[in-house]
Length: 456
Ligand SMILES: Cc1cc2nc3c(=O)[nH]c(=O)nc-3n(C[C@H](O)[C@H](O)[C@H](O)COP(=O)(O)OP(=O)(O)OC[C@H]3O[C@@H](n4cnc5c(N)ncnc54)[C@H](O)[C@@H]3O)c2cc1C
Ligand SMILES: *[C@@H]1O[C@H](CO)[C@@H](O)[C@H](O)[C@H]1NC(C)=O
Ligand SMILES: *[C@@H]1O[C@H](CO)[C@@H](O)[C@H](O)[C@H]1NC(C)=O
Ligand SMILES: *[C@@H]1O[C@H](CO)[C@@H](O)[C@H](O)[C@H]1NC(C)=O
Ligand SMILES: *[C@@H]1O[C@H](CO)[C@@H](O)[C@H](O)[C@H]1NC(C)=O
Ligand SMILES: *[C@@H]1O[C@H](CO)[C@@H](O)[C@H](O)[C@H]1NC(C)=O
Ligand SMILES: *[C@@H]1O[C@H](CO)[C@@H](O)[C@H](O)[C@H]1NC(C)=O
Image: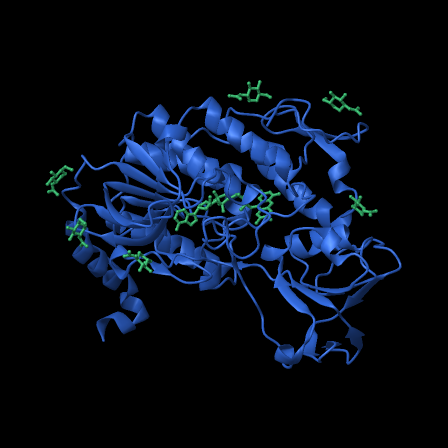
């Protein structure tokens, strides 16, 4: 058929876009802009929506702002019976310098260490919400369950945990900021059903005390796996760490054992691929998160899988219906990208700039796809920004007047990512100071004082 031939890919894509384009006409501007989620991303967008005088409303599932930065002692479901969205645990300190995480023009107090605790970051988010005074726009206890294209606007259906009623809200413009680190990836191994110990995902991990004196298996060496290794190695009777990351492994103490990948479970332990066996009481899978956008109806025109979303212009805009914008989808970026995306989304909602035509947006999307392909990446990487991050900031600034994040932030990101793997136990003992747009200095933090200067 016509669309099967690679040579016709372009014409075919154009045809599809042309078919869709007419439908986006006749937006009903009298409907408000809606934001799903009041975490870092949704709050950032709210600040700009207010600044630009847009009529808006934030729908937040929980009773709280802050998203994943709020520690919740509940496991599994929260105080209102909703699945727990936050993945926060005790003693967490950021693994990236705060300078890469701050909202534009809203720095932490100067005496805040560069790697603050999650408690401090949560206070920062609450303080931000108060300073910009938009809490009255947030409707709490409203879990969005369905988003439909209703021909000219979005029908956003949500469940209220206070009244137990389901309501549908028409939204002229929709910003989706529901978080991308909340649906655990849970692997399954041979014999796992017969294992008599406990098995959780790091999403449900809360407190090292749970593991005092126990024989614990950590699986994975991503951000969570490495962090939990440092939190648990001096508490557990034995800490077995199964992963295949090549990094400068620090000395975790005499009770730490590194293992290759898991082969199978027995009733009381785990066999690894080198045929070695360890008796285990508790397993924590630090195996990452899947995307979760099950509230998107087919009519939204978005292909949403557990690993990628498409097609999105600038990693944000729904190309078929550009009155839908996602924040937080890009991978391998600093938090400041989410702030820039919030400003872009708000500027679009406020009609401060015009998007290119559907064809041009699709072309840009395909250009990026081909570029990734040339680098040996696959469709799973379609939302990766990575090394293109500084260009991305520049592009958003040029297109939509977004405050340009200085290149020094990308430099710090690169250094921190490397340094974390070289000096895992000590990389947070330094503070960063921005000298100008391109340069920073990194100083040993003699204070060893992690008090948070922001009041609760
Ligand atoms: C444990 C952990 C540590 C991290 N540490 C760092 C770090 O050190 N540095 C860094 O740069 N990044 C870090 N991150 C990444 C982190 O995700 C971002 O910092 C940031 O919190 C993303 O904000 P968000 O608003 O996009 O998502 P979230 O913080 O997840 O907020 C999403 C909000 O949407 C709400 N919501 C979700 N679904 C619905 C729905 N259907 N209806 C209504 N509301 C909904 C949730 O309740 C939540 O309030 C970490 C992530 C985790 C999980
Ligand atoms: C636009 O919105 C207004 C008020 O919300 C409504 O009365 C009107 O019917 C809508 N028009 C269209 C074309 O949907
Ligand atoms: C959108 O919601 C309104 C009000 O609930 C309803 O009348 C309309 O049929 C819905 N449209 C679609 C496409 O579901
Ligand atoms: C509300 O929506 C939820 C989720 O879609 C559904 O399970 C529930 O039955 C609905 N409740 C009512 C009262 O309609
Ligand atoms: C274990 O190590 C962590 C990280 O270095 C430290 O914060 C914690 O206080 C230590 N706990 C104990 C019981 O020594
Ligand atoms: C830690 O820092 C805070 C704020 O900078 C200061 O008020 C406090 O006295 C310091 N505490 C110690 C033990 O140095
Ligand atoms: C935010 O925090 C700063 C620093 O602690 C403080 O001066 C300010 O009053 C706080 N703002 C609000 C609204 O609480």
